[in-house]
Length: 115
Image (cartoon, rainbow, N blue to C red):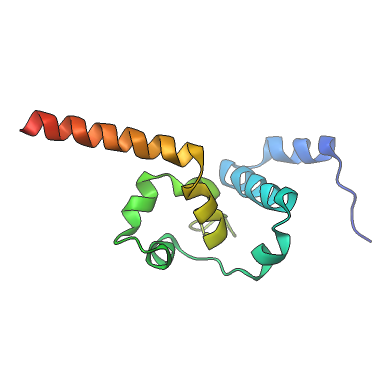
């Protein structure tokens, strides 16, 4: 029989969890609430380097600068693993658009100083 999870019980566990587990729990919960549970379960977990290749980036540092780690999942305390669908959704998000705009602003600022 499955355990019934209450919001109070979940929040008590959440409060004592390490940060990477908190983020993983929120990522999974968001997918479940969006109805993406079937595709997420079958989707492979990728390293940041593998994810960059799959998404067509030249190097994984681009994803790192865009803070794609926020959708990473920690399995056993090692490096984060990523699902392609979660990363693609994040890259289309307003949060990522704001980070891109800030990086663009900084790059233009540096180019202006160097010229």
